[in-house]
Image 1 (cartoon, rainbow, N blue to C red):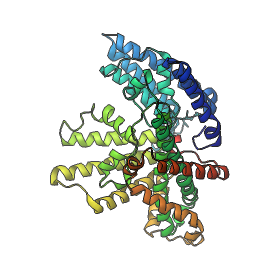
Image 2 (image 1 turned 135 degrees about the vertical axis):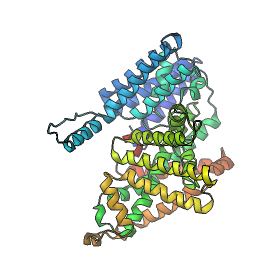
Image 3 (image 1 turned 120 degrees about the vertical axis):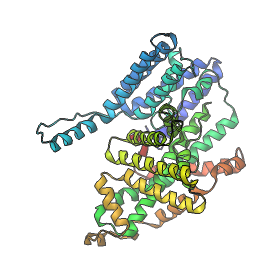
Image 4 (image 1 turned 30 degrees about the horizontal axis):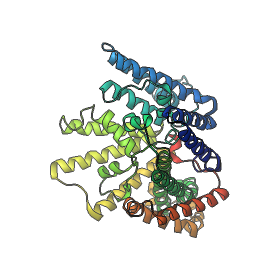
Length: 471
């Protein structure tokens, strides 16, 4: 069940909200409303994954006991934490990376002269496994560190892991950020109004912008990448740069908005990443919940920047290698992660040795180009496709097939207008504007307009999954 579908917007979400607030009105016990949200969340996941919901339930139960055992035990805390890490990472590796590992072992075996085929298995990737696994990992690690207490109520714990707004595509919410709201929260009309508006704006980002641009992006990247004319190649990449931002940012906004309606406050996951003046700043603005996770649970434990420059550069490379791998089991994601890690290392070297860091309009332009090249690797099916596409962008492919791919055929007036609006929205200070008009009549009217236009588009458009569902 997707946020941008009629089933969710017309049935699941309003019914859940109505039942939730009726329960809040009839009972002051938060466990009652938490139970309702838990049942709704499990139904939400069951709708999309069916019997594979058992994987989510297994994660909930196992990490529930891991948290309690880590807190209670004195002597074997570290051993239990190791088992918890092994369970969570093992589950992630099995479902997400097993076939990728086997395929590369087979390639290596062939290279070394072997002849035995190492088989792969038909493994269904559970939706959202990367997100709810990382939430579980952050919890057991925080319990081990003593920064949070273990959750003893199974309903409350299960709700934290399975809460439907952020269950399948984030943001990654840490237990320490919402544990107080799980026990006690107060909904008010301002939060409900504000959350509903955030949801409507997020829905519009997805349906009115990302989906419109995405249809063209899919067609361009589906062509023979060695036959693209330069203008079409650049246009396709620019549109994808806008699409992935509005697609993921739109989902995050919808999750934040729904959570706010229900009394939970999630932090911002995107803060205008395309106005960043260097790649270091970009990662402070893009997918903030993932960036902060790797910072706190990988980069700092490795030593961060406390053990000299060389180890700092190593730690950055490791973090972004893992960040790329987190996004998918493919060499394109690994290279994309290493690409960003290398850029960050170069920026750190320039800052340490020459006190230089890109800034201003020049820095913003260069950063955006670097980010776009990264998105090319990210979007391509294979590294060969990425190389061919890059050659086309600079006119280095001379295949005559390009004459059949005309720019105007793909860039309709609707797409051009949408791209212009998207470009403007990506660089204007929306957060400041939101604060100016927050809870005003104009703010609500804009949200209703976005909702109305989105519903019209949803009624006529074909299905478009969120990009980050595959991760």
